Structure formats: C-alpha cells, structure tokens
Amino acid sequence: MATVELKGLGKTIGQTPIVRDVDLAIGDGEMLVLVGPSGCGKTTLLRLVSGLEEAGAGEIWIGGRRVDRLPPARRDVAMVFQSYALYPHMTVRENLAFGLTLRKLPRAEIDSRVEEAAALLELTALLSRRPRQLSGGQRQRVAMGRAIVRRPAVFLFDEPLSNLDAALRAQVRVQLQQLHRRLGTTSIYVTHDQVEAMTLADRIAVLRAGELQQVGRPLDLYRQPANRFVAGFLGSPAMNVLPATARGQGGELRAVGDGFALPLPAGAVAPGRELLLGVRPHDLSLVLEGGALSGLVEAVEILGWEAFVQLRVGGNAVLVRA
Image 1 (cartoon, rainbow, N blue to C red):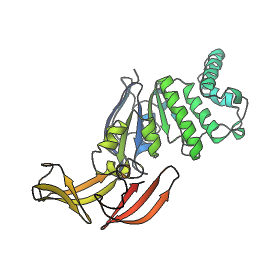
Image 2 (image 1 turned 135 degrees about the vertical axis):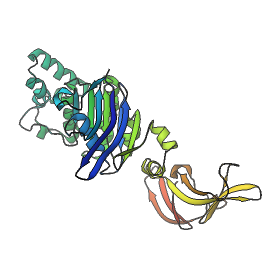
Image 3 (image 1 turned 30 degrees about the vertical axis):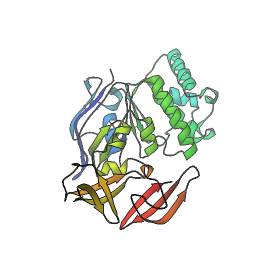
Image 4 (image 1 turned 90 degrees about the vertical axis):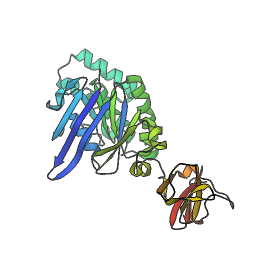
C-alpha cells in the first residue's frame, strides 16, 4: 500500500507560517493535484513530503510508515522538478540509469528498467542522444523516466510542464494521464495550471496562504466551491461574483443588486440577507433584449471556437461566454 497521510503538517520560516496545520490523506494509486496562487505553500508541501525540507510540526506517513524523521533516500519517493535537471554530459540512457547505478543494482536489472521506461515514454530511439539534442518535451519525458526507473511508492511532480509551450504542454499532459493509468502509482502533483488540475486529478486540494481550503473531485469543487476563494480560483475564466440583497416582493423572492434583480427559489434565504451570487461565464448567454441581466458591452475577446464578452452591469463587471 502506498497511501500518504499528512497529519497536522506545518512549516514556519522565521515568523512566517508557510504551511499551516495540513491534514490530508492520499489513497493508494490516487493522483492528487495541489493548486493555489503563487506563494501559497504548494511546493513547500511537496518538499516536506520528499524530505528536501524539514517540517516544523506534524507527521508524514507513507505506506503506513512514518517518514518525517527519515532522510529523503529512505522515503521511497521520486520527484520530477520544474527544471529537467538532466546531466548534460550524459546520454539519455546514462541519465535514466544514473540513480540505479548509484544504488549498485545489477547491470542486467538496470538495463531492463531503462528499456522498460524508455518504451513507456517513447524514448527508445533517443537513448544515445544527449540533453542538448532533445526538445523540451523530450527532456521532460527523460526526467519522468528517471523517476519511473526507481519504481518508488510515490511520485511527486513540481510543475513539470511549466517550461513547455502550450502545444507541448497539451501533448505531455495526455502522456501523463496515460502514464498514471498504466503505472497506478500514488502521485502528488503541484501546478498553477487550471487545465492540468481539472484533467489530471482524481482529487484537487486548494491551498491559500498555507491552509487547505477544500479537497474533492474536480467537478465537485467546480460546481460546489466551499468558499469565495475556491469559487474565484478554480475555473478559467473565473466565476462572476455579484453582491446582492434578498428582497421579498409580491410573494416572490429576488436577489437585487446594482443593475439587476433575479428571482430566487422560495425560502432559499431570509429577506434582507446579504448575498454573493456566483455565476460561471459558461452558464450565461447573450440575448439582444429580455434577458435576466442588462449591461453594456465593454470588450470582446475572440478565441476562434468561442468568444468572451465583458459586460458592465451597474457597477459590476460580468464575463459571458458567447
């Protein structure tokens, strides 16, 4: 079993808390994706699990074994970094084999593991090349292969696709999905990319200032965010948030705000209550007249397959997909 359990995990640098009392359980074979704004503690949390940084509080358990007091080499984890960190003077084969050679595994086993990883990542034809002869996507696959040959209990990914261009990111993301399905290794993946999070994750954990805000399946977080931060952070483009007040009028309940009055389900909230209405741009559509909101078009972004229209509704900015 390669479950990962974080119990009351904390890390403070100076007087600044970086990770705050994190309790999190990752199931055997699960892909958990950590998301949050820059500086929220995502990478620090990953480094705490790997042992590259020491926790100030709490416990880390991997496969039922407490590891927070163990050095990185004894935790049975493999980390793939944002930078490829390949040895430039070594061939792809030598880069893949290097960690296994240090562990003094038999040559036949090293060769077998390298060939297996190379076939899995479509690197077989590149084994004799050096990193400077590879594209960015190929280098990242070699970095992943170096982790795979170790056959760890847990993979840790620290924004591994952020140095790739958009087309390569999409290609390698699909390969990562396929790789996870085939290997079934427990994985913790840090990213700031919304698409990566939604497409790769079995579950997503949202961090803010070192604190967990919500953990759940991607669509659950998208459809039922726990708070305004999660609602605004998850989803691209971001959710529209409109301040309003619940008012009863003629037996009907309405959400009344600056430039709009929308019906609410009977009994949904007490009249006089202050509200925040969250509406995804993809759940709105444009009509020339007679719509629920009325606004002035301020800008249009045409993406080819869709467009996003920025409206001014009273004092509120509202984004609509068209």
